[in-house]
Image (cartoon, rainbow, N blue to C red; front, side, top):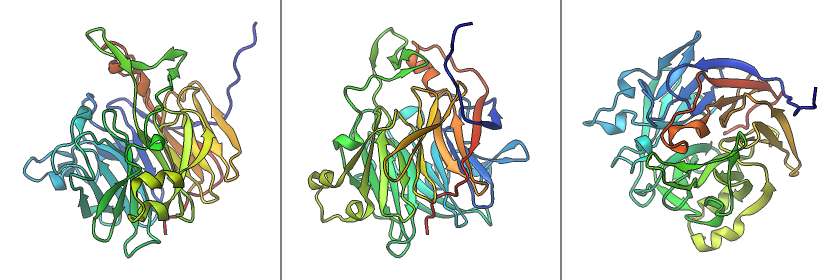
Length: 361
């Protein structure tokens, strides 16, 4: 027998998805697990769910998951990300952009759900200068130690327009774009993604092709809330910036780029998360791997496994496990001339890291 590639990292299967393709996962401080399913062409019966006794249940209920054209602010359209903040709230990020369309007017929103009552507590919508016609809201992180009610930081991973980090003042809902179109939030024009040994690009049903380009996607926040780590989806680079500079609207966007720090290559990542010690965890979708980046910049691979077929979103549970959604995103029909190469089930996996999630308060 010839030598073969070595795989490592003790992954455990948490849940298998036989229906729609999931993207987001978040584990609450009490161990509840929430997932979301954006409307990318699959039959999505509910876009947010909780895994309860081995079953998917629409969350907070089915009615909220049914688009109500008469009340789009109180119904979910197409949710890309969910985030349990560690203090009793599940935050739901609704792109309002099914199939990557232009966001439905007034539909893009950040929704706070009380985990004790399972009811919507607050909805933040966005002005047209924050969510552009090209915007695709992707992921969100929080810090409740600044301002009266805290701040949220959202990545815009647009494929057609400028990438950005959208800063939201949770006291008054004021939202503004930062690093709009900056190199650090933009796709790397020289990056050629290769997954499962093949070049990943848009391959259309008419035979035409184009490069796969997505802007800022992965985002993580340091345990003290002072640094945001972020990365474009089509790039191998990791960047950071101080949250104080992001929030300071007196710094013009043109000058804000000088506050960005470059951390080097970490592999091409979708989601990222930080633990309580400041370690950053990031997927490497080109190499079926999960990386850990220490605060001093040293990088190690904690899992390399053929089952890690596109590691999407990460979450750290109170059980000190790192949870990851694996969803075969690269096998979607849009990359293969209209032929869907995904094989069910999609997976929610976990690996023991013996660290707690970074606090938000």
